[in-house]
Image (cartoon, rainbow, N blue to C red; front, side):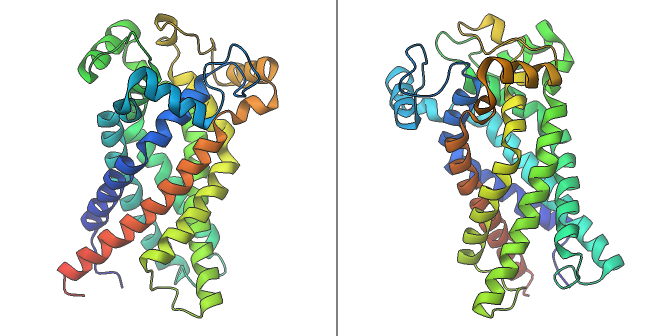
Length: 308
């Protein structure tokens, strides 16, 4: 029986979100810039601003300085802390409820399905709390010079005045469609890889060390991000609608989710859905590994505090 309370899991999730965001924010900045670029991301394209990871990294650094890689970091931290706290605490609660009905969730034949379902639901719950922070973060990261928003407060005020409260939930449908399965796959594959690790090395599946968490989390991140990546790109395109027309660049104009999906395919082809995939999957590998490792470490510290 886990001695940690729901509040403990909430704290551990918040700590995990904070630490992971600080380390992985540069990946996010590069990924978002790539996702919002209409032109193909390749060296041979004459009008494309970003033509690859190294080229994009150098260009951002040269034009905007080192701090550009942490643009939107404060709302991103708020996003990560709120999301991490809500996701992990609701996930642990749901798993406990599932264990009451189905028995030990590590041994039942339904284990992977249970972890997927609990992860899916917890991801959706966390998204409802964190979506406004995600929209603000995306806009702050997307803007180049001259800036449309100079501070978080200015972004909030202008968005409210010019677009209304709905602006803070732009892209909610694709976000839920993406985050639900992504969160489900992350938890499902994480526990699947933990099981495989334990089988290969003949270890107790309930004992989770840092190395084990990092490796299994990284593998989970790669698989889960690949499966839902196109929805992430559509979400980002929709989040900058309204804001994009006032920026010096264009991110495309879309009337809704289905129109965005269709327009990307017509103008950019199938590969358009995978723009920014490489920095995104690198980020997913790092963030998922960090999320689970920091979360497990925080839980261990909290158990140590309780003397268990």
